[in-house]
Structure formats: C-alpha cells, structure tokens
Length: 132
Image (cartoon, rainbow, N blue to C red; front, side, top):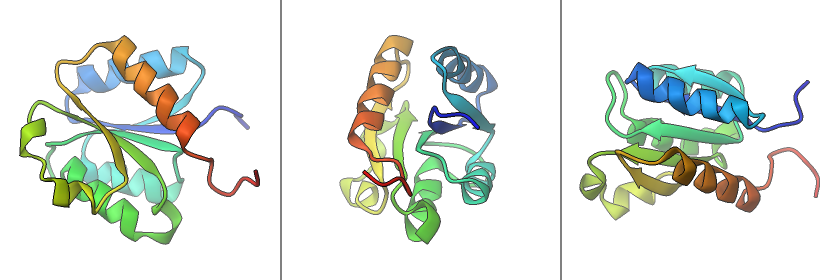
C-alpha cells in the first residue's frame, strides 16, 4: 500500500487533467482521475482521497457542486479541495463556505504554483483516520 497521499484530479479537459496527474505521480503521489464532477464524486465516495483538485465548470456535476456533496457525506466531509477555474470571480464566498475548498487557482496556472499549493494544503490538512 502506498504511503503517499491519494489525490483525486477532476477536470473535463483531458490535457489539463493528464498534466496535473503526471506531475503529481512524478512527485510520488497516488492519483485517480475523473472526467467530470459526477465521476469525481463516485471515485471519492468509493475511496476517500486526502485532497481533491477539481475544475469549477464541468458537465454532469460542477466542481463546486461536487465539493458541496463531498462536505455533506460523513466519509468525505473533511477532505480539502483545490479548485481550478477560469471563472474565479463567479464563485460566491457563500458557495465556497458550503465546501472544503481551501484554495482557488485561476486558469491558466503554472504547474510549480499548483504543486506549491498542493504541498501547503497537505501540510495543513491532517490525514483522516490517522492518529497524531
């Protein structure tokens, strides 16, 4: 079993999802990919990730709605999320309060910036089910 955190990457743009997943795997993380919010919700429900990286606007279920649903489920209620969006200005603070979105990064973004945010979020978020 891997000792590195499991990260769920959810984006409907395959090239963005694959670049992020490749960079995370190269850093030693275990990564599962989802092509939309509904698939991401199903993946996270089946196996709780340590962190979710999601696009805001996707088919079937938006990243925001997926994060709201994850916060409502007992098994995923404490999973932190990092949201990617070209439309960051349209995310109302009241909507974010209903989620565990801890960071919002605008597209286009730098991979180095993303990895720095991932590292910071993982440092600030204790693993679920692990005694300190």
